[in-house]
Length: 95
Image 1 (tube, one colour):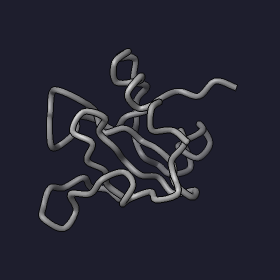
Image 2 (image 1 turned 90 degrees about the horizontal axis):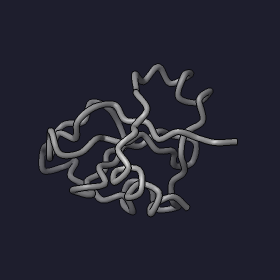
Image 3 (image 1 turned 120 degrees about the vertical axis):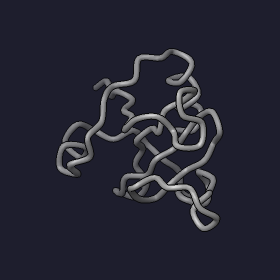
């Protein structure tokens, strides 16, 4: 089964340069920017001193791509990412 890479929009750290990608850690959605490598464990993606985290901090046991059912049940509005560089960078972090 092929899974898509989904994003919820521009990364708030580097808007216009990369996306906030939707990933799964222990059955919870997490969000990650492959360019600046900032990660979030909840929405909204805000920038303040307490939530500038790395992917290992947000998902110490690794991440996977969400399936359509999990994404649909979460009610997170996301779109499929087709940017080749972004997809390639995200796949480097999938365990």
